[in-house]
Length: 503
Image 1 (cartoon, one colour):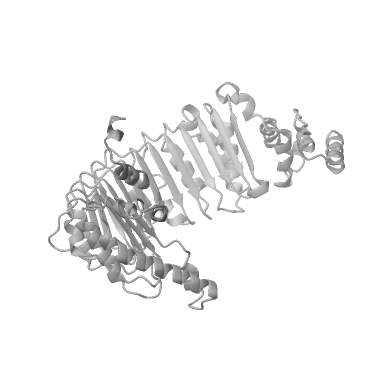
Image 2: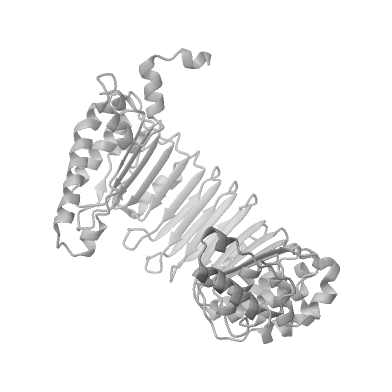
């Protein structure tokens, strides 16, 4: 309270306005003379071109009356920023965000606005420029690369990163470079090699970005995320980050090779790859506790290189396995074998629809059940689309053979046909009984834990599910909805359903 009473009225109002979006703060200028220029003292500014001008680009330049009105609003915004930002009264601009998605804004204007922010000791700068119409990339001022106050820098899309040979960013801790272009191959490397306190790095490559090789050698880095598209002309990337805790790799490069060294403090990893570098990536993260693996398509040749390899995830406790139009039962089984301490398993095949009968494969593995299923696995979650045979077969194998399983969550189907089941299980006491139950009996047992209305809705999933609801031992009929919306037809439908259901 003493601190608040020490503020003048104007300072307190500016502090309150700083929690509002810039657009809302500007509208307060019409309230009175006192409010007229208060917003110009805000330390945080956000200018977002969020009027969905993308539609103009999709139409190939043909414009309706509505489109012209949208462009007129964009032009007003451009003139507003161009006129008012140079006159901004705050001695320090702590945060400047620019999101520009139309052809009206000029690259020179962006250069000027960024230079103004740098002159006001900006701490956080975010610029996204997507003009669409073939305009040249926005070249940012060289003063940006010598800004001592800059802590966070996020650049996205049509930005030209031209790093001078002499630069200094002593306070930079967060750097995001998403689909930008580099003036030359050395620009990216110079930038990465001279950020000595960097903790969070995101590099998302795009086609034609002028980079073929890059190395991330940053002792202070805690989080690293990079993406290489299939069309990128990458040859090699090197990662040496001894303090890293979070690592995300989306590598679809056709010819790239990776060299990953020294990440002893790694805790969580997300790997998405078509298979080209999967062996090297997994070999470098064997000591993580949380692993998410996304397989976008079927690349059996690449995955075959893993089978039989002595790769053990001794510390792995959480595994998320996501597939997209791929058959990966063999790879998943290999991962289960290699993870003796696994406690939580999530399998997501919502985007796959395969006709391959994999139950035969899993039944063949019954003589060699992974150690984690026998001693450590406690939770299992399956997210499926209802058509995936692979997911159903895996769920059957897990439920039958996991001795310590406590929670099983199944979410399958889409929209109104979606079925969600979550149940605490005491399988460590009753595993012998459950393993002897047929598939239909097991499904009926699961349905018995759900409300009757939900159990009935599963009849539309497939022929197997059509009549399972009639074998449920616990029935609940609630006419609450008939009371909230009373009508003769609703009561009649309810009576007919109960009478027919109980036959």
